[in-house]
Image 1 (cartoon, helix red, strand yellow):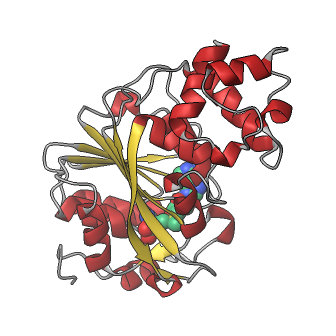
Image 2 (tube, helix red, strand yellow):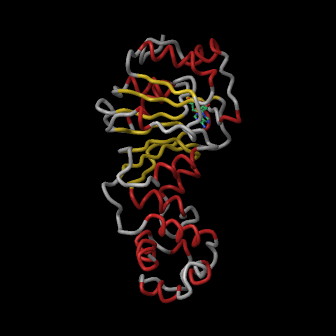
Image 3 (cartoon, helix red, strand yellow):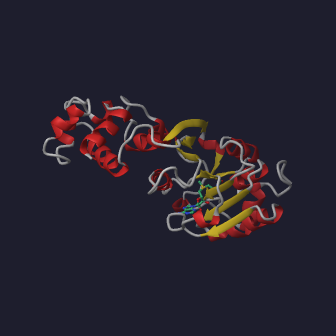
Length: 278
Ligand code: SAM
């Protein structure tokens, strides 16, 4: 029995249900329930919240979330081999865990959730960035979630919180920081996972802001940022010339020198440029 919930230790769960890790599904499992409870605590007070978890696997983080008091957890898992192990957790926490079997990229979980909603996940590396971008770019703001607490490869986490002037600064930083407060809250070594990945991982916590930091049309901002960073070595007057024939004038009206490069432009500057191009 494990210390946090009376269910069997995760190594035993994995052995009982034959859950050998599959690389194609990004399966690097967390087996230390003290660690998964600590990750769950990074999401803040969970007792009044529904939690969306993508990729529960054998359920280590799921158990952390439930033990830390989440009102309900909705877990979306692609690997059907994990379902019996997750059913055991659901039985230990009656009415608090719902599992959907399927691909998180194809399932819209909103109908299954009641606000306030927090998203907490140790994401599969191959779909993590895509899910984050979707959560950061809904049709309307504020989004369905209050916060995202997500495990990424450390290099991806650094891109999310990056500041101007750094190599990691780019589209992901702008997307994340325009409408959320983003910070790295934990760094984990490879040995924290079974099997261990080659690199370090990090947990990022993103708190949704009630409104964007600076006004801008989301679609225009996204186009500008994509064009600027697709050719990040070039000056803005060159990388953005396809967006408007008078791009130099528009850059100046946004307070930006046309000779700047994308990584020198702060978030506020990109928003001003999106307004000048709208
Ligand atoms: N949460 C578990 C933990 O922390 O030990 C497992 C995390 S593991 C990094 C990623 C999990 O996501 C695996 O269980 C994998 O099967 C699942 N997964 C991979 N692709 C998925 C997808 N498209 N939709 C839902 N789950 C997916």
